[in-house]
Length: 232
Length: 252
Image (cartoon, rainbow over the protein chains, first blue to last red):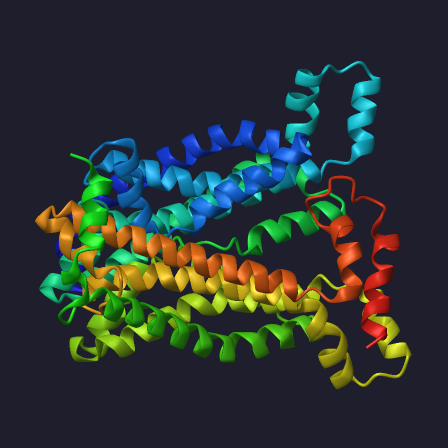
């Protein structure tokens, strides 16, 4: 335990870096997943392709992905940029599904009512479809955030400094407390962000509580869903 | 210079079949640890998931386990267990890690497989006089099998990925050329290893996808395309498209 007390500053510093890397990846992943998820939802034929393509990327084990993607795109594998790209790819694989499932969960009657009231396609998407899909999408975002924060530690293996450093350094120096501190820090950060998302969701989407059993099912499916993934 | 040319040159060099770190050896180690861990995890997770699914009790437990497992960094857990159990017992510590990581997916697969069955199918089975045991083995297990295999699939891929990382604690496996090569900047072997790992994962994923497909009971196949969450207009159709499922279950 002494190690933790002596190194609180280091743990704090690494946590900030870790959180920055993870959040950048999830935010970029989310922004890219909205159009991809919408396309997958809107065009039946493309849906299979989008889901299969992102699913295949998710299948590739993290360490392999972090080596292969930079080799294909031609940048250094040993860089923070590479880690963030890899994490973004995994986030997209989770989120695209969430966005498509979320849009599925919107009652077609509501959608038709909005159209009947004269909502155009774009306006209907932003003011009706997306807010109503919100609770299911949020469930996907929670999964993506938590798994990204935990996955980011693999960065230590490609020479990127974050909380994963406590694992490699603790292993080399045989300090169990250091490794334990890293594990606890990752879990606590993931938990805090997750609770924060729940809270923000309740504030922004008060309708998420008064939802049909169909939406609840979709939400539960999103939160327990086991995407066949190789991320580790 | 082309990284991929170098990687393939490394992969197909005759030296890859010699010594303690020959590729076939690493490949066998990778498969061995994956299979062993997933089998142990299935022996624990499947009965537990079925119990939760059959009784409907402990759902929150299954959801909580799945959530907690996602937050747990597998790399950290692995090193923690290696240090706690002692470096001499690294293989045991690694297997414990893999099992712990594989259980949640398998548990979720077993449980959601049962949960996805229409209650009326089970009520119908009970009404025809099936015992709880018969309902379990003749209705719930076959109908829940595709999702269970889906859970096993996720577990296998997760373990394959973690075995790769476990090369860091000298477990061997196909991650070894990657982990050993990065500090040396030997990118031919790093990329070569990564290609093999990715191929292994993709092949296993395909095999399990095929098994998942084959596990759908005949009577359900026609209904599946309608009930699949992929089909958009699923609202209000549940009553009609669940019927074949009930029939399928009862005809056996």
